[in-house]
Image (tube, rainbow, N blue to C red; front, side, top):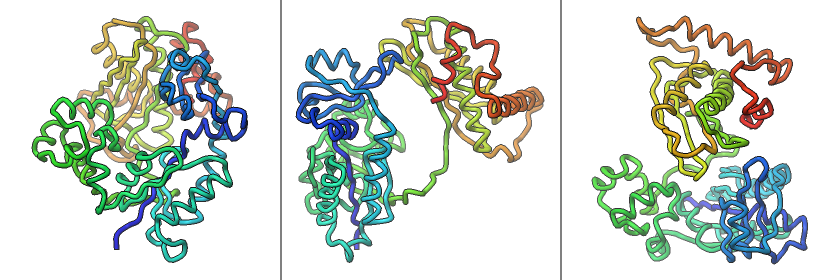
Length: 404
């Protein structure tokens, strides 16, 4: 007996919650947007009337208003979205204990064991849809399939307020003509690589030669081919399942454009401190440091470097990230934001092979200093102790902004 998987996606979730709270917004072009003063002024979610007028998620507010002059802009209320998301999951949990959230507004449900109680998967999907509409005042698009990837395709296939069944008997008919970008994990960069070699649909990807895909995309090429064929053995994880953490990162949009190396160095240190703190809380060290850079034209790149020894020192992480930045950015444009990530995590209590040349004593001292700073900040607040390099050009308040 095969699995029965549902993917439930709340339609225009943030905007739907706002329209439920204020019925006057219904039927109007509505966009929930970030704070313009904090330089987060982009569209987070748009209602369907706004989408029909050309408003897209990720657009700057001014671009959205150019496309739709009568757009109603609403600030986000995350506590309310989290509350409604919790109520949504309570409904899901009343049908199965195998519920895997995918953000606030989406979840997979394995209802294989629920059929004796609630009927067929289509009947369960219909009942969930009606309950959510009646109890929460929002709508769902639901995909019904035998695996997670195809169920996600089903929920995306018809919107809003729709239920789509995609099983082996109708898989090719529905899925193969879809654009390759519709497949989960095919992002803009991967899509560009695939289209460059003539793979524009999921069907073409499914029929593509494995060796060719592996040469083009590495191991991920084989994974995507498997998904395109409608195969995905990944189980739906329980909501309390904790995945192993593989990396720790933090990035932020600066309150103003960064225009020199000193600006970037200050920001990297602030971000590295939060990354190093999280590593220490996890009892881990990172073996790879990664820096992310985005300029004011929204072009970005990522560079990484393997460390000679594992570390959770904020100074070592920051200086490695800064050196990567210096070697790869030539100030063609001011920067809008940067990020730091530590990956390749290892147990901090495990033994490591010491080098005859590396300054392990210095690293150990910096880690002890970080630990002392952690304790002072826990007792007296974040601003109780800071690095001298945190110059007024960025400001003390930015420290909190980086750690959100």
